Image (cartoon, rainbow, N blue to C red):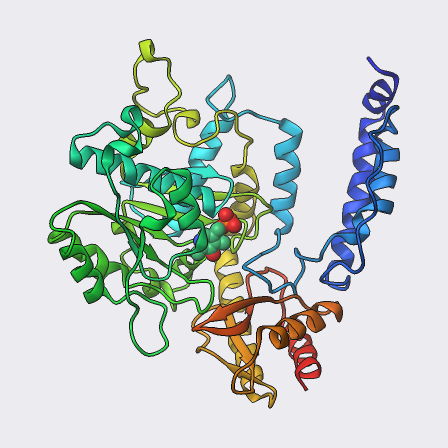
Length: 463
Ligand SMILES: *Cc1c(COP(=O)(O)O)cnc(C)c1O
């Protein structure tokens, strides 16, 4: 064994203690460190010829790189939909690496069964029935990709084609219909050989909405002349957190032949609160469902869950069996369900957080985030330099400069001024053709006082 490796082995407890102390200082200072990294990253160092050992490496990381990491896990990083990592989930994440299990299959370990327990809890949390099975993936993009891959296989079933063997081309042109799809849906279509251009935007409801017009969806389906299609319903759009009427869309199945995929990446968390659960009413009727976990569950990157009612088709797409062994039966190993073969125990941080805080604790995070988004929305509305572009429907505030036609440059300058203050981080968007900013609340630590600080910096920067 190499000398430094042997040294580290003999001092492993001390190394882990140092890493723990370092992490504890970071977490303690997280709420106060600049939210966005200042300055430029260091130049590239040469590949180390001789190793520095674990302790030396920790010191080097602390000096060269850590100062430039963002406070994205902290309470005033409101860009994208980011979320942080609950205390218990961080502990679970450390132990994922400590045990370093490969969850491709059972492999002499109980770990895969822990993933199944976690998936069953999540299914219940989001109000899905037992007909849905699930698996962990790295994020909502992959969850959407897996869902659409199963949909693609279903189209093959309807058209008498084995897509997994013959390829997507055997289907001919595929129709994917959606109102306000996330950009990752087009990416998934590209990956799956369906093609980005096959995404058809269905008109939205009138009156400043991002939800699909179900009557328009029905006539788009009718125009297909009986050809089966894929519908992507959106449960929580990123700009204004609008929700498609899932129950009404599912009811269209009585008259039209389509696979219903629901992208509930963060909107699925509405199910945790009795006040907002009606927004995802009908989710259980979906054929496949995507929910992100590194967003509103507040577990570390990267984690999402993918649910489907058609595990048989999922296995047809993703199975990794030798042809002479045949398809797996019964409870398939995870390597037959997702793009990865070898997989880390991504479920453990979620398991820790669910055990530590339960349904009630995670509901409180959701409800507090929504209340704070409303508070910020009222504050923004009252500022002379800003105006809301949409009502605060759940956890995102979408707003722009008060002037009549705000330019992209002026909005970007506002975003930059906010980031440079170190107080908050917001991401730009375009809503209804208007350059805008979004403030997305999804972090477990965000408080009323944080929201006041964000409002203060917005008042200064827009004043
Ligand atoms: C964030 C998001 C995605 C993509 O999620 P990743 O975790 O970044 O892959 C997809 N859909 C919606 C609605 C999202 O908010």
